[in-house]
Image (cartoon, rainbow, N blue to C red; front, side):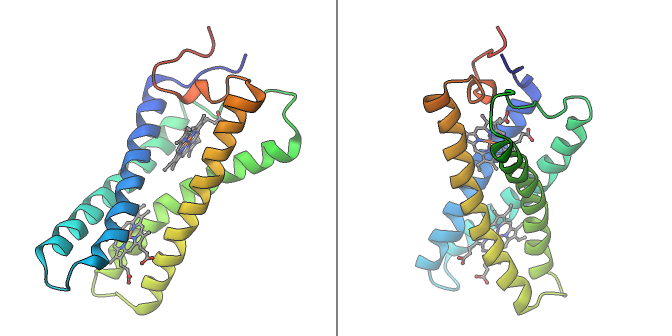
Length: 160
Ligand code: HEM
Ligand code: HEM
């Protein structure tokens, strides 16, 4: 049975999930509001604060990895899937650290159009990563039934 994640890893995982969802909802709804409107202002503020929180939490996660390292997938998972899974996780770390930095640069005196372009592309890349990631989790949970999904769920102890 693969070892479960500890409480802190799970807490950090699910906090970041909630904040990434917040990022997508705010960024995709503020275009409905006028340029100077309160709605747009509030949504953008939320996007900014939640984005900075993601940056901080991802750095904390990196630090936490030192005492709580990556859990290997079960031996009988195909190597290609193992590589893809690891690549998906690394891509999350890179994207979720880079994306708030781009956002901060965009609103700084160094703002430039290409930064906005990069932020939009990376934003959609995150969406693709999430779709692949959730598909992978559900594949483990409901098709392979190998406890890998359970080890990140909040109230389970997959190693028992
Ligand atoms: C991990 C954190 C973040 C994620 C996942 C994220 C995601 C996104 C997404 C999906 C969009 C909409 C792209 C589109 O128009 O199709 C967007 C737009 C934007 N975000 Fe973020 N964002 C993050 C952090 C930040 C931060 C920290 C700031 C500012 C400090 C910021 C500022 C902006 C701005 C100004 C736009 C509008 C860009 C434009 O259309 O020119 N973002 N973001
Ligand atoms: C915004 C959405 C999400 C992000 C950014 C995200 C990010 C990550 C990252 C970076 C890891 C690697 C482990 C670590 O560093 O602690 C991970 C593991 C995991 N995530 Fe997510 N996740 C998201 C949504 C979800 C959802 C919705 C599920 C459940 C359906 C899920 C289930 C899992 C599982 C089961 C693992 C453990 C995989 C393994 O042990 O190999 N994640 N996630």
